[in-house]
Image (tube, rainbow, N blue to C red; front, side, top):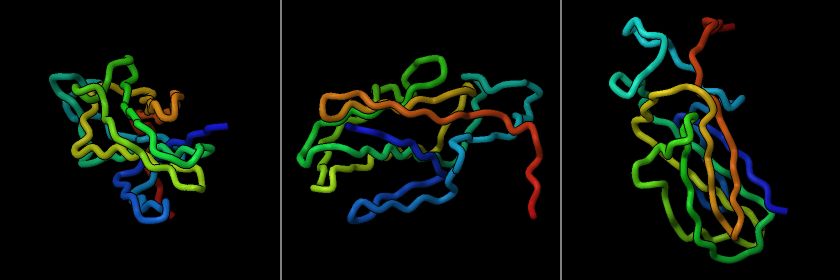
Length: 144
């Protein structure tokens, strides 16, 4: 059975042998933002928020070894595609271990709405999805 898991970080890089480096990993899948200093309660298309970078990793397991065409896209909370070109296409090599990592890197990551963002991939004839949440931080962080 094919399964997928989503990870979100400030930056994710692929290494050899299926390993990844993740810097600034959002361990709970929630990207928390400071409120905009515009006096508004939300970001807008005219005044978006921005993170210097954001990376999304979709880890897929349970595949047969081989090469598969893949399509990966990020969908906003309102259901629109994040990228104007409709996502990214590539051929993905799956080794004998039956797993692969698909990474989307954005720099900057513009935010016009908060809520659940969906990573959607079509691979090996199946559509896989995972989500992460973008919200305003309502509680100040406490260092220990």
